[in-house]
Length: 72
Image (cartoon, rainbow, N blue to C red; front, side, top):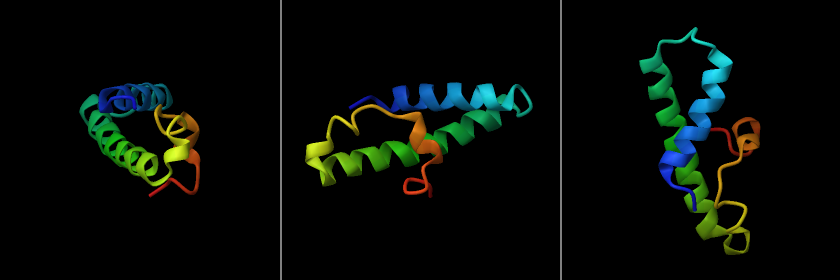
């Protein structure tokens, strides 16, 4: 499975492009940390819960950010 840092990098890049410097960097990092924690925990849990889908949950996928089943 990807490291938590890899999850963070993907999420941070995604939101950095969206906010386009309209959000203070500290706030953006804090937001991305919260989102990273949530999805990293979800992927870890799903990987254990669905062992046949381990490949699916080994790398973070941006489509999960907007998917209604994985939103908090």
